[in-house]
Every structure is written in C-alpha cells, then in structure tokens.
Image 1 (spheres, rainbow, N blue to C red):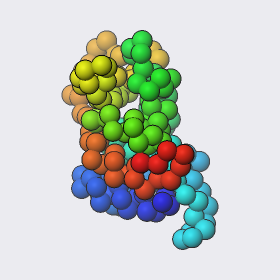
Image 2 (image 1 turned 180 degrees about the horizontal axis):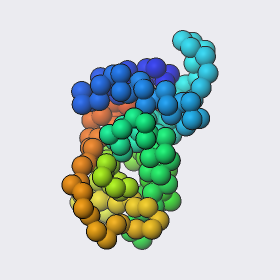
Image 3 (image 1 turned 135 degrees about the horizontal axis):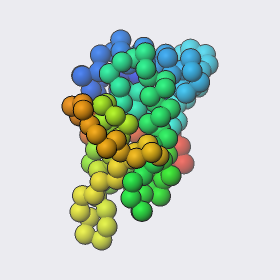
Length: 175
C-alpha cells in the first residue's frame, strides 16, 4: 500500500474525515518527515505500520490541520498511565504501531480514542484471562490536567476501520 492508497482508504472508511482534509494532513506530515516521501505511482515507497498510526493520530488528535505536525509529535509520545501498558509499549505511537504490525494484537482491539481537547488517548481492548474489556490511557508525561475548562471532544477509530487499514500492510506478521 502506498501513501496515496492509505489516504484514499482512510477517507473511504471514515466519512467524517473529508478526503481533502485527509490529503492536506498527509501532505503536512510528509513535508515534516513523519510520513514517507518519494516518487509517485510505482515508485512510491510502501507505507509501514508506523505510517498508518501517524496518519490516524493526525486525523484524530486535532480539529485543525495547521496544528497537525506538533500535535502528532506530542500524541505519539504520550505515555501509558498504568503499570502494565498495552503490548508493553512505552508510548502511544509504539502501541498503535504494534496494533498494525501484529494481527493477533489487532484482533484484541475494540477501539482507539483520541481526545482533541487535551493530550490524552486510550486503547480499549480485550485482555486478561477472561478476555474482559480493558482501557489503557496515555497521557503527557506531566499527567492529566487537573482543571478541565473545555468540553471533551473525542475521535474514535473502531476495530473495523483498524482491521481494514491493517489489511493493506505487508510485513513480518501481516494482518
């Protein structure tokens, strides 16, 4: 899958994200070096799991395209709030990447939530011996803001969309 195909698929699978907005954010992330750069068509480099994670964070974490680069960098670095992080990932970016790298891990994920009001994200998944739903929350290293004067706005990416996007990747453990 190329970046152009990923952009098309993301816009197709989530009608809330207009194709022009997905393209603009992808372009800004590519220009910042956060998404692959290269030729067009057959010369385009294939996207990897980290690229899918980066684009999803770019769409889910902020309502303003002009903020996408700084916000993506901050969200990818969010750290788990609990002692046993999802997929043993040290940060949100790594956890999302693992979801797209490993079909078994992807199968456990119910949804990914990104708060657009302050830097916070969650992965809801089935875990433990009984397979109950659990939530791993990721926060800035400084922790959750004590005072929330804003309304919480959350973007959710459900398992169906995650599976569709992961299915286009090739790698060591393709979905």
